[in-house]
Amino acid sequence: MSVDAATRMQFLFALRSQGITDKRVLDAMEKIDRGAFVRGIFADRAYEDMPLPIACGQTISQPSVVGLMTQALDVQPRHKVLEIGTGSGYQAAILSQLARRVYSVDRHRRLVTEAREVFDRLGLTNVTAFTADGSHGLDDQAPFDRILVTAAAEDPPGPLLAELRVGGIMIVPVGQSDAVQTLVKVTRTEDGFDYEALRKVRFVPLLEGLGRE
Ligand code: SAH
Image (cartoon, rainbow, N blue to C red; front, side, top):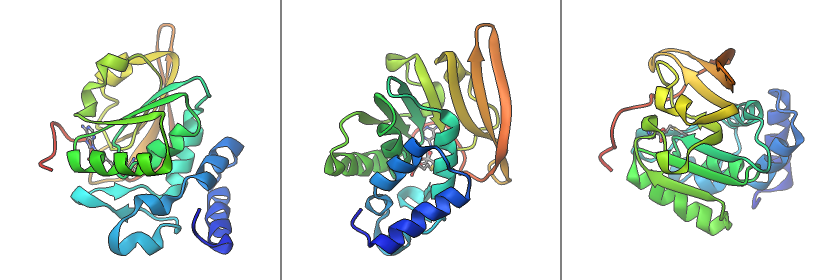
């Protein structure tokens, strides 16, 4: 990180105090500089535990929520992970530290282009971002060991459930976009899916089709 030691300690302390205890997750969040993913007037607030605006009317998630979702996803070094909602690319970059391969899709081309620039700058070679409507999944690369949806869906999308490997985990905010949603952990078993409600969250909605820019 290019930030001073005090800011960095405060950032990690906030994560721990919000229940992020997994050492691999904390290490990844220490290593990946959130400041690289926040542009413009909000850049100096990158180390505060709050969501911030990014281009295309979207948001970079709150660091503690990124940490808790990543922790719940239980990513292992051999895993192939799909993220829906690249946004700034921050969450995908954290996942890249934990997984073998990360695919991330966003419906806004501009966000994908900007995220790719940051991945290149940081030398993250195992993460690939695409412009696509992620609610249909990513057939070419399926199945996935882990799927993380970072936009709120009214139900866990069927095509994504179908691309989850048996034993695989999907984390998805479920609920109406204008209300508080429930973060749900879906585990694929031999004969179906188990659902566990984790906590309340607030995400932008998962929308159909591609964005205008
Ligand atoms: N994970 C991001 C934050 C995501 S914000 C980060 O770390 O910064 C949610 C993102 O989901 C937005 O960028 C939005 O464009 C995207 N999104 C919404 N619906 C989508 C869909 N159907 N397919 C792909 N991306 C979608």
